[in-house]
Length: 101
Image (spheres, rainbow, N blue to C red):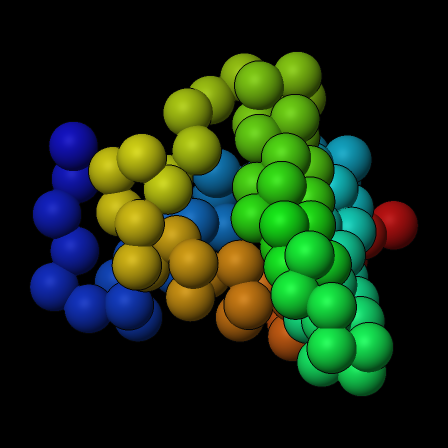
């Protein structure tokens, strides 16, 4: 297991673990599901929507890893950096810095 002294060191590794565009698309979709579930829970007052956040977020991401990347999700070895990486990559996709085409 690689050790990283900072998130700046981890993020290039994280991006390399997401080299397949289908995996990046699934990660993006999972992040959208997390946002939607939180907005639905907040706007309706029904906390039951929150179950969709981890199921949708991790479910989409792990399908990408197991079926397309053929690697083990970084969540298992670097949970905090991996969570941060999900959101940085999401933002980078929105800004066009990481491609999903």
